[in-house]
Image: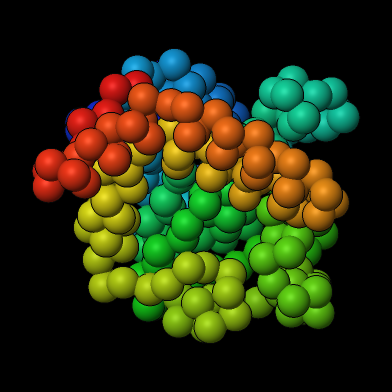
Length: 261
């Protein structure tokens, strides 16, 4: 991967993914954006993957964009081309986690500023340290959230609260972020908590979990009729699956189910 900006350790269905530029507080330069893109591609092809934990090495999750490295980057002169599905390279750093077929849990400590906060928002679940500092900080630099932040914050917060956080770029701690709904919950050791949750998810039917994520991803844009139809289609497939039959057998035999991917 690009300059080893992202590392992946994989065991028992769980990928422990870490932003790995600790000497710069995991600040986002072009190599980091490309490293995330490479990691996402690797994860999509990783056999047996059931859940991802995303965190940062060193003192924090991610301090945001490295303005010194990205300031004159030619790739920023036109952000319109779609190079990664619906997204550009920079948006993919956050949006890619949402489109990954398995659940992603962000474990956040230290700071998650600007682009780092938006990468965090790409996760399905966000567990943060109570004293972590979070900010959607782009307006401080005369910019707008553009790492998929607008698409990800939609529906997550009450509209006026989202506007306040974006317009002011103010910093909030993990406890306030949890009270507002920006993050899922706080934990003294976010990474340990996220890994425990990931293992619990990995113990469930992988077919059911992937189907549930597809349905959850469809909710913001779909009509009720479309959601009901999608729900029925996913359930029809699951009822006929070996994974469902294994859960029934395991319950009858009073043992843990054994799933095959």
